[in-house]
Amino acid sequence: MAIEIRETTRDQTRADLRIALEACAVRKIFRPARGLGAGGVAVRAVDDVSLTVRRGEIYGLLGANGSGKSTLIRVFSTLLTADAGEVRIFGYDIVRDELAVKRLINRVSVEASFFKKLSAMENLIYAGRLYGVAPDEARPKIREILRRLGIDPRRVSEPLEKLSRGMQQKIAIARAFLTSPMLLLLDEPTTGLDIRSKREVQTFVRDLRDEHDATILLTTHDLDEAARLADRIGILHQGRLVAEGSASELCARHGTGSLEEVFMTVTGRRLDESDDTGGGAGTE
Ligand SMILES: Nc1ncnc2c1ncn2[C@@H]1O[C@H](COP(=O)(O)OP(=O)(O)O)[C@@H](O)[C@H]1O
Ligand SMILES: [Mg+2]
Image (tube, rainbow, N blue to C red; front, side, top):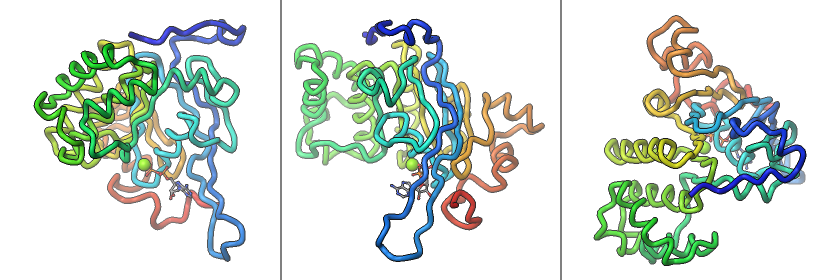
């Protein structure tokens, strides 16, 4: 059940519907609050990033901690306003057409919030209601999604606080998918999960793309996940997009057989080193 895209404006008619997201020279700078004393520096969390996500694609933003992944996702999902640049989602400008954009996207972050005393089913039905999905319509859809996520049907009625973090994360993705978003923004969907849950979430993400005409933009600091899941990978380093391509294109371009080496070459450091420490680049 995909949301229909209405071609209402002239702009929209001209939009290329094969492009899910187009970002052009996006910049976000966090400035220290005034009056809190000296010592704060402005951080260029996202620095002149341009990228295109094609419809039906799984695009992986790969970067170390502090490289700007979440900031970029929050800009794309209209939670944060960029200082410069433009972003279009299925042709809609995220500032001028914010409401249309909000109908087309959904975002899941690692710190997804739930009513912990309520069950998975209750949380999802509640979320469905917020988006105008009636409980009777939502229930079978929820059961199917949870089944595909490998969640034991007996556990869907247990309070969420009794479930593992992995399970809760899967339920967060299921919740975002209830609205049938055209573009799903997943911020580190598998961080903190054990290998098995990781694989289940990855399979689920691929199924969403394959079977539901969904486009997925996800962030990760897991090289293996990027290589395994993403059709194209953008490497973020200190707020800048320093490389882009499929895993095999990136490897070929840098004359190496591993994404890890590509990462080291283009960023000068290992993925498990934070972008927040040392160097001082990324600040202004
Ligand atoms: N609300 C904020 N205020 C100030 N600095 C921030 C804020 N959010 C993120 N940052 C800084 O911006 C940079 C990028 O952060 P973030 O986008 O969270 O990176 P990632 O998701 O890749 O770990 C980091 O240096 C981080 O400390
Ligand atoms: Mg983050």
